[in-house]
Amino acid sequence: MNNSTGSTATVRAAGVNIKDLRKSYGNNEVLKGISLTVEPGQVVCLIGPSGSGKSTLLRCVNLLEHPNAGTINVGEFEATDPDVDLNKMRQSVGMVFQHFNLFPHLSVLENCTISQMKVLKRSKSEAADVARHNLERVGLGHLADRFPDQLSGGQQQRVAIARALSMDPKLMLFDEPTSALDPETVGDVLAVMRKLAQEGMTMLVVTHEMGFAREVADRVVFMDAGVVVEEGPAEHVISAPTQPRTKEFLRRVLDPTHIGVEEN
Amino acid sequence: MAMTARQRAKVSLYVQAGIFVVVLAAVILAVDWKTIGTSVFNFAKIGPMFPDIFLVGLKNTLIYTALAFVVGLSGGLLLALMKLSSFPLYRWIATGYIEFFRGVPALLVFIAFGYGVPLAFGVQWDVNIVVMVSLGMVASAYIAETLRAGLQAVPKGQMEAARSLGMPHWRAMVSIVIPQAFKIVLPPLTNEIILLTKDSSLIYVLGLTASQYELTKFGRDGISSLGAGLTPLLVAGAFYLVITIPLSLLARKFESRSARTKR
Image (cartoon, rainbow over all chains, first blue to last red; front, top):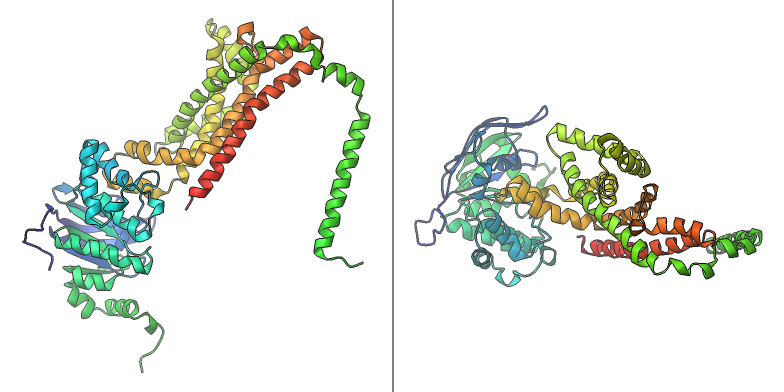
């Protein structure tokens, strides 16, 4: 539903190609040979229990974590090439964090302009124009002069999305973007993400929002204990999983009151 | 006989106040007020100290402190970044430097640079340079630890967000991490200036010309020339308080401000 061929496509999307990715912390191997492809313009949701390695996988894509083995290609960049220009690559990869990580000493507008000015060398007025445009996109144009600690969690997360968009990324990574939010602000953030998906942005999303995954994702990847257990179209993985581990996980997530209760 | 907790606390307070009054009275009675009057509180004879203690002494103390602080802040920032570096050699150098200069008395550092350098190299540094180097190097060590703590107090997510936006490491440091760290270390940094103000007095061990006198040297000079006993030192001490108390109030203001903005 989102591989829009229509007129709203404003991004030149990039794809992601991950092959046999391994990552260990000491003796603890958290990614045990992951392979995953995201086509340009696709939305892929990573789901799975905590500790399954999905956030680590996401953080490997823009090299916030350095994998021990395997290759990652992001658009024209090979992220795992030791000679890759990381700063250049990261300019085209937007990242949204669970805890927003807005810069508290800068205003909302400055949060969205600083990297444009310092990294892309845009003029102050050009950067401000881009920033205002993206703040409008997330519905927060009127809050440009506030500071992060004056905003609600949901507003901060939307600013974080606008900040990432201001660098004109070709791929967006979302690391549990709604997990730290009050329930009533989750919807606003998901709505922004849904709109982005419709505009043709490539998105890799770690999430526990099954409704969002089912509605927006082209593909859903279920991970557990460092491996991909099951992947496919959302309606298959979420609505008709074939693997016992996927079934168990979804049963717990979709109906938490069932935990520990035997069927009779 | 049984007292409530509140009554017991009240009685305890009265007892403490009583002890304080008794000790104070004992000290007042024991003091030789006649001698004190001529050799400590003899304000009648200190006229000649003015206005030079103000125009020269206070000015020089402020200059020496400022010089040392500028060197200390830049050196401290460099050392803090070295200490947090991923390159082991930098960490070792910074750690060695910090441990050494925090471990030796500042007075010895003054003597080393004031007398040692002329002996070793045959050059006589200007007093301002000696202060900048010796007090600045000592201050660097203390300020480095303060800044390191501040840099580490900035959440890791700030660096990650900046790097994710394509900023190189140094740019993320300069634009994102260091500004936040400075806000955190403003109160301890202000205390550092207070310590420096007082340590600038150690320069009295060097041979100073009259125009280089700072507050303490003025006081010591007054002791021998005015015949008012220790009174000139008392005056010098009062001038230090004129500098340090406002700084202390400033530090407290910074503290309450950062407590308010903390989320």
